[in-house]
Amino acid sequence: MANEVSNPQRFHAAQALLPQGWARDVRIDCADGRVVAVAAGVPAGADAQALGVVVPGLGNLHSHAFQRAMAGLTEVGGRSGDSFWSWRELMYRFLDRLTPDDLQAVAEQAYMEMLESGFTRVGEFHYLHHAPDGRRYADHAEMSGRIAAAAAATGLGLTLLPVFYAHSDFGGAAPLPAQRRFLHDVEGFAALLDGCRQALRDTPDGVLGLAPHSLRACTPQQLQALPALVDGPVHIHIAEQVREVDACLAWSGQRPVQWLLGNMPVDERWCLVHATHLEADEVHGIAASGAMAGLCPVTEANLGDGLFPMREFVGQGGRFGVGSDSNVLIDAAEELRLLEYGQRLALRGRNVVSPGELSSGRWLYQQAQAGAAQALGVQAGLAVDAPADLVELDTSHPSLHGREGDALLDSWVFAARGGAVRSVWRNGRQWVRDGRHVHRDAVAVRYRAALQRILG
Image (cartoon, rainbow, N blue to C red; front, side, top):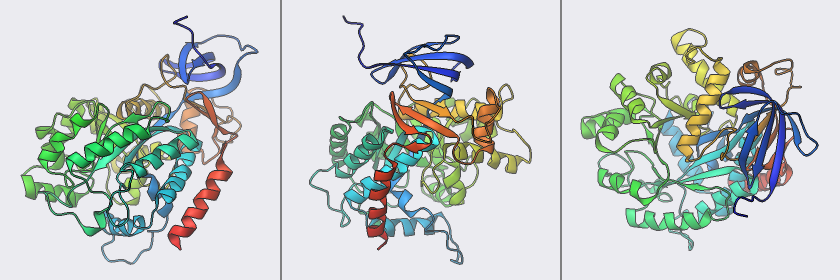
């Protein structure tokens, strides 16, 4: 029969966060990795997997997986003028050591940790394409294939965002030798995308987008040619650093976001990553365009980027999601916590981002969850046709015990430190059980071996 489905599953949650709010005794029917029915107020049946408190999985809209291996290695003080730009030079030297096997092992470790923290899909902003000497691998998409393999091995949903990179600075400046592993012209990049499509064939519900690295890294002509190469999301780093803003002004007479909004058809497909340094017209322009603000609070704090004007942005209807970026610390709740706390420090108040109808934890979680889904090109939430991505919280955790409804999310985001996620199902398959990824030991062995070789 045409309406038959395969691989049916049934879950029963004591409490679940649905798009319309919290509900009790929720039955969630799934098939082929997707939700096919949701019903509240239904008694548990013997045929259902019994769960406690369930929330939809959160998307991580911005990651550079390979940087997980250098987390904690750039925190040495005493360098004069240490900044994002000096950190970048250290990162360039580090990535010269990565082989395809190393990349896959490091990505598996990062993706495993994402799932354990409650992330169920990642937007991999992937720019490490070539061999250390800059030559293409025999398989042009070798490194992208390793990212896809890492996602498949760990169960994490993947929106692959191959990065276009051709120049070192505004105005088409020649690339630096340290950037040789990133570089393409438009024709070569189109060929890379064909390879990426092949790499995603075995990745359940994989999505292909693309990412002009930044306005620094491509000319206006190149930037204008890129969005037509795919149907999926378009992500770009923008206005992360004051130096970048100043250089854009010197080149074009406009600030980065002003230039982008005035010269490109920015709409719901676009995700503007960081967008830290904005003026009022840029805040309004992003919100009015429907584009996402891709915020990475842990990395932005680690690199000293600055604070996004969050309250002004959401007050104008702006949409956002969070990402783990440099993966210096992978923790879904921590990204949301620091997003709110950064604004509290700047504004010297409490609960300053939520408009007030909902608690801060629930508002942040639902907004970031919906925003990441848009930015990653998928439907999300515990709703029909969405991926069966379920996160079960551990109500025996000291910070969650005795909580109900919004207090559960508030306590997870603001009060829990590890261990608050009990189980994670991704695309209907369980990948985290009792707080541990089901392949944790094997992934850790491969990661340690790769790290020993890289650091050696």
